[in-house]
Length: 167
Image (cartoon, rainbow, N blue to C red; front, side, top):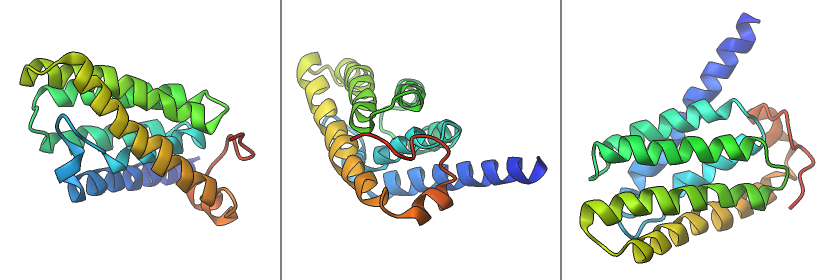
């Protein structure tokens, strides 16, 4: 029991750290009206293991400390990631699961940026949505399609659901 809890905490800490490092390493394209936050591809890990919602939410929260939209991005951006992860946990199709972060971030972060920068809502929403689509539905989806053939990926991540996932 204790070993399992320690392993869960360690995995989530690793996921959170990777989210923060990926966001910070690509910070030039991770924030703003035109963004492709590569680290968002990690949200698809919730498809394979529900408890990764903690690491991803904490990682997003920490990464948003670098946002030019403080303190709003801490609340809005992190909430969008949390809701995305929550929906991904219960989805059975990987590509459809990837659409949740696109929608949540497009509208929530899009509205946030549109209001704070006084820009047109629909334009910013479309830009954020497109960036999220590229990060999650293109990069993330293709990455997980490649990884699904690697049994070691499932062992390392401790995947316990959707092991034989549909597209």
